Image (cartoon, rainbow, N blue to C red):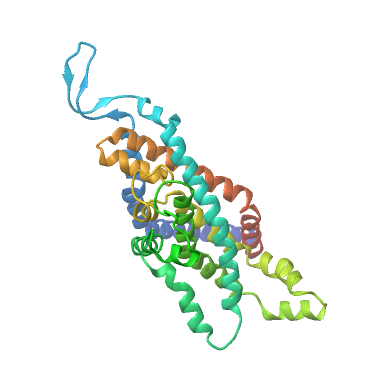
Length: 314
């Protein structure tokens, strides 16, 4: 009886301590939740609400001019199936797939080089990270100068290509500039993952006769996978909302490089707030869907490892 009473009191103390920890955690997280509500959730709700209205002067059923906001329902979303939105969505997806793939390959190569110990490694690391530190607008202006008709690119290639005009060369110019700037970001995250891999693992693989390629595919890549997945996810989210680099490098309202963010900006500057909000809502849904699919398919093993670690700690 005494043992049962002591166990009951111990259980109540444990539950009370857990409730206290939960309340403390909620109190510490509440400022963050408030800031997220003001900075993230309120703009999302406001944009979704704005997408259902039209503003300006319109005619009612009797032919009278009506000013102000008018409820339009889903009429603003008709442009989502239009040709211009489809072109912007295709450009955005193309830039995302091509740039992220190239940045992953180059970023992993940069991380492998920066991870080796050699004379001048600190200087090399600083040099590789400089492009990532350059503001995007400055980077766009620099590459615009390089891709001019009489610029450095044509001088090296001995051509007269109009890189910043319409067409496939404008797409290629944006891809090159974006990869140059953001590949070091992927390399930095992958390098952080490489730093935590014990050297003893590689030494054991060498003793077993593993080649350099086998060590990379069987040791480096699996162990650096969590950092690489985070880098790819961040770059996907960033590339899907790209706006400033095509705007500065090529210019606004260019069919070849117009992205979804550029389309939203163009509609908003023309005071078409309803369609702009509808396109913004569609872009948010698109990004959220891509993030969900990415985490569901590629991040399943990572999340399983995290849950297994928690169960082991418990």
